[in-house]
Image (cartoon, rainbow, N blue to C red; front, side, top):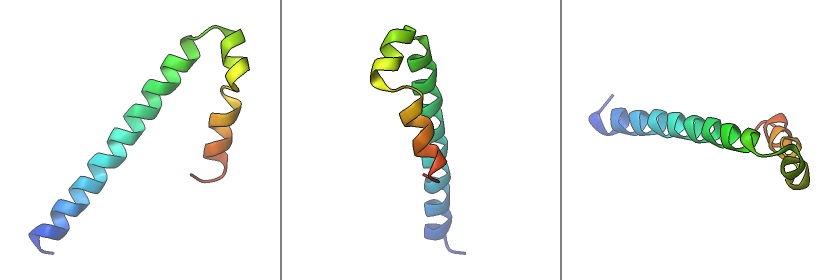
Length: 55
């Protein structure tokens, strides 16, 4: 394994961690909104559906 491959692997891993943290932060923010607003924008139905399709 050369240095470039290792660097790409680390970048990929860091990117996944960043995505997970952003999703957690988004869920936390959205869940703090009043129920009526969450219902109007379709939360969590749209979000959960996205994950249910394997994305």
